[in-house]
Amino acid sequence: MAALATDPPSWLQPDVSVTHPDQAIDRYYLGAPLIAFEIVSEFDRPNDLDAKVEEYFANGSAEVWMIYPKRRHAWVYESSGTALKETRSIHSALLPGVDIPLDQIL
Image (tube, rainbow, N blue to C red; front, side, top):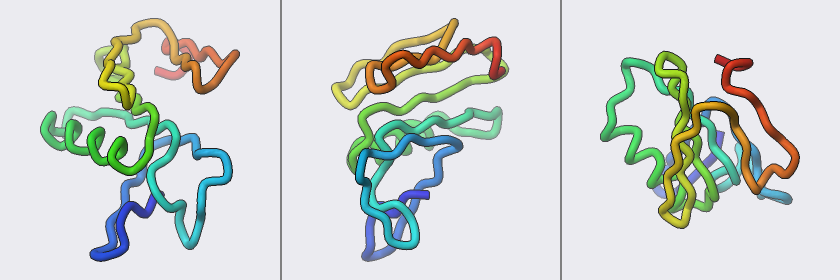
């Protein structure tokens, strides 16, 4: 869980995350993770997902992965504004040498 603001307190809890090196921690990590992975369900609303991506970037994330299990793909959002659709594997320049086939996790 990442504490994003202190007054009033607010948090985001990605399904999976990779923290920044030396990311500050109090009771929870402070700020957004380096990479946030969100598993999207049929109950998630597009506007809420967009707001969540914006909130991650506003608080320090470099990438946000929205993984759609039923559709068997993922969207990778980068803080630069780039969005890429991935249909085969999870890989990122932020995680050199890591390649996770979507078929193995979905």
